Image (cartoon, rainbow, N blue to C red):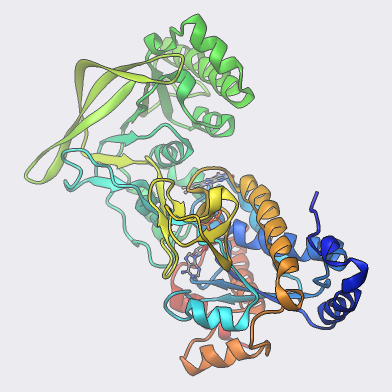
Length: 505
Ligand SMILES: Cc1cc2nc3c(=O)[nH]c(=O)nc-3n(C[C@H](O)[C@H](O)[C@H](O)COP(=O)(O)OP(=O)(O)OC[C@H]3O[C@@H](n4cnc5c(N)ncnc54)[C@H](O)[C@@H]3O)c2cc1C
């Protein structure tokens, strides 16, 4: 429960001050800037307004606020639109829920406005009582293996940008390799591997992929895929949903090493302690059986149809080098590992080589760095006080910078599902309200309180933000293009087209 510091402030001797604060708080709106319209930014805006309604009077900050939500891309929703795989339509429905949240007169969307380039921290602090960074992540962590710079080594983030139609992403993708490797033990590795093994028509039918992605996948030559996971079956980080999607790839035979499933009692006991891990391990055992059936039935896919693609899953396999010739990938070298019940991995000195012509690494994302805000390289997030979202002077110095906050992946680092950004939001909003209640003037500390001042500033720089109505015009166009092909949506990918759709009255 949120404890109000305001209660201590309101002893009888101070009642005159309480009354003044209360009146001020009720008379004017708080002004909050949120940077990043991914799930963390949208949920936080919504939760801020709800919590303020509920607790604002008790806290002495009033119940009125205007939230301006800035997004550097021409469209909102961050990785929900540009990270989640196209064949996860159920997750894409989250975008509809986020959209409903944005349809709120107290939330003002400013897409196509980049913090750090179009507007500075001082300009925001002049106009907003608090600034919340929800800037997420888009880049890959580097692979850091010999051969990582060979032609044919790709970071998952870049490939995801291509298949999800990121506004500044590649428009063509070289899918020439017949044998490919994917490195990683989490859901992004699963997504990448699945899209590399997917049948283009199956994908098009079920998703919003644009034409260039469909045409690229039609020409995909991949026939063999090796997924390498450094640790064992009980230490992977796959969700059951992702595993089930892997099981149902038309034309794909799953092949899995039986030996990886000889788990000792301690490992089984350890895995059983966590519900999600236990469910994942159970699903992996089911996949092992399914793989046996596929082999027994004569190398078929999950429906018993002949398979023309092979998907190998290698646990306890740590890639050590990408091998090449003439600057191009030719193979990958992998060291067999053993993993104890405590999750500690040991190298065995036994190496294997697999011929591949492309290597995709999905070993983690790297959060955006934000101009003027310290970055905590160790935790891979913006520097904030022990994860409570209050921005600090540096990662080492815990001194808090007033009125600045972080949430979502910007606060926590690039781990966790969309749902976790909701719980982050509640924590951060609670802290923001506590701080606003302690501040002078009922939290109304920004000197420039004219809500149109930001519009004038942006206009003076030639910046034309895309608002909620502008996004709805893009969305309507995507729906109408999709409907012509019997699909729900078809993504617009070029930023200039988005701008002209959004600004067409
Ligand atoms: C490949 C991939 C697949 C995933 N699949 C799933 C899945 O299937 N299910 C699931 O639950 N989770 C999935 N996730 C995780 C999920 O995407 C994240 O938990 C969630 O998106 C994090 O939300 P966020 O708002 O913190 O960051 P983001 O979604 O990254 O949003 C940040 C926003 O801030 C904007 N921004 C950044 N810098 C600036 C700036 N300077 N000025 C203005 N705006 C800025 C960005 O453009 C972006 O829109 C996936 C993640 C990845 C990478």
